[in-house]
Image 1 (tube, rainbow, N blue to C red):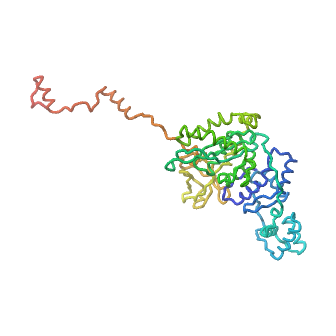
Image 2: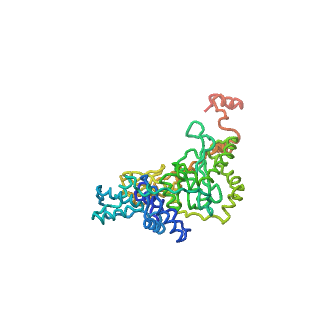
Image 3: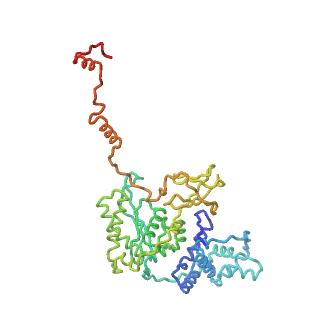
Amino acid sequence: MPFQPAGPHDPAEQVALFRYGVVAEAVNPRLSAAERGRIVGELARRAHPHPDGTMRAYHRGSVDRWVRAYRASGLAGLRPATRCDAGQARRHPELMDEAAALRIEVPARSAAQIAEILRARHGVHVAERTVREQLRRRGLDRAALAAEPARAFGRYEAERPNERWAGDVPTGPFVPCPRVAGSKRAKLFVLVDDHSRLLVHGRWVAEENTRAGQDVLRAAIVRRGLPGTLFVDNGAPYANAALERCCAVLGTRLVHSRPHRPQGRGKQERLNRVVRERFPVEAEAAGIASLDELNDRSAAWAESVLNCRVHAETGQAPIARFLAGGPPRAADPVLMAEAFRWSAVRVVTKTATISLAGNRYQVDPSLAGRRVELRYDPEDLTQLTVFVEGAAAGVATPFVIGRHVHPAVPQANRPEPTTTGVDYLGLVQAAYEEATIGSIAYRDLPLPGLEALVAAGGEDGEGTPGDVG
């Protein structure tokens, strides 16, 4: 079943993204059936953060069902099915005290089991969701009752290249910024391969935002292949719906580090320290005129120095260890375009047209006056897909195209052209004068006045002043 794209305005997609976050660890295609079974069992015993801020645990059957659905249909398989019973469950507050006592008696009892006990004792059906919500409000959810065991943190290293990438945004030197009167401290979006310690890709930017992070991730995948896991912090560039959807489409597990828990980020922090100690000081000493120049020098230094030095822990150069098993497998271009799609909402004009980034497009006439969502690849504005209330409604046909790449993409900012000094009209004039009157221009010729003609007639003795005519 092909993947059905959806945008940030589709509630069903938000459910699918949350479910993928729960089972991402178990859908790795490299896992055997036995390994996947052990991971699913662990996921079922673990409490997961819900979008409403609570911690929730899920039955083994639910986790198994989500894993099978994703492996069969991708992210579309995790979208909730349309319910046939839209009625709301009635609340039974008189039974909640008994439900609380049942949970306290055996903390491992699930909400479904407690609801079944209440039905068997009193003949009243109480929705599982109602039981779970009431117990959570009383502080009796299973995650809160389960004591967290002491954990010992050991050293971790990925077994192979591209098994796990880590990302961060350290700060760098001041560079001139056209948007502000003066300079601004640059920030480095950087991705590191856990196995080889390779700096996969990095880019210095002036603004730390979601789009800059996605641009770096896309370029890194194109250069180095697809990562199995992306390990990042909880900063705004990484904690957003766009990155969640991107990783879900690509099959990459997105993991956020817990606040105030630095475990697992040692390799990333070490590389950040090396970059801060060795590159910015030299860049500032040389004088950097722009972000483009900073990125050019940074890329050259990373590829020829940082990735080629022998790492003290592995005893190998990062690039050599990364390529020891051969070149990485390239990601599917169609899947890449779908994963990094952007979304925009527009209202269709009375003439059935919409505008985006200065371009105009024609859509189906039946959409005139309606609010639609446009999904597109920011690096190819010739193809836009139109969605209405989460359902596909055709494509937007280019009507007036003046820009093929979205202006927010860094590659779209082309440098100012240099002056050639060619005077085309001057060349044309010079060629014309050379062909007609040689080296004498019209402006150098005297006007033939009356006195000149008289003088010319008197010199040969054949004319008089009255003969002029």
